Length: 214
Image (tube, rainbow, N blue to C red; front, side, top):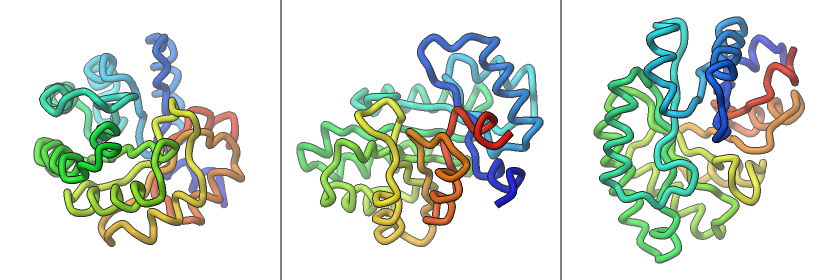
């Protein structure tokens, strides 16, 4: 697959806790040069990036990141502010405590609440597969589908492991036809990206795409 085509799948990402404005502008300039799907950045930079780059970029940011157990009201406030600041895509982290307590309905309700706020913008739901059993992964596929989110996403990249092709294939089997799949975490090479696209991913979260693809 040509590099140009692969870049169209990439959410060009920098989410380290010590990310500087210099890191952000480098990321954004690369994203524009290579026509990536979006930039995925810390929410504290969304407004400044929107003011600096305007419509040249699709801005993605994260909510409830990376642990997910903030209460729904906190995630609602984060989401509203991110949209107001110029984000057009939100990657939220589910409440894994609810999952482990078997309260799948609470997870579904929270996703639905955030999707209502996001509206016609994009909501991606990070389920952090490294902490889930197969039963829980399938339950999250159903919750994301019922709540009408746009994407299910494998990982934050901050957990004990990242994306796997097995998890992507499981998601593809169990999500509804309108739900797309994003893989993230540990995807660093051209071969990795091609494999995840072939497995059915419509987005790839990656911080090293330029190094991998040139």
